[in-house]
View 1 (cartoon, rainbow, N blue to C red):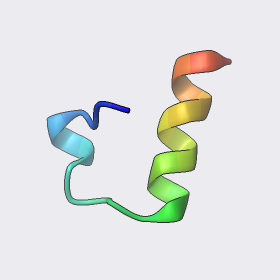
View 2: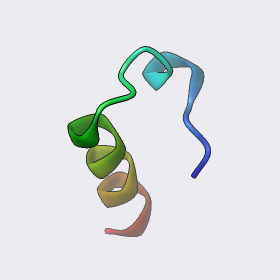
View 3: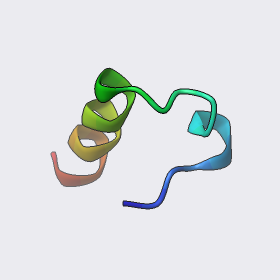
Length: 25
């Protein structure tokens, strides 16, 4: 999973989950 620069500071379970949801939903 590639973390966008603006999300790089949010390396948490919630942040990763939100990233996956934003990509696949």
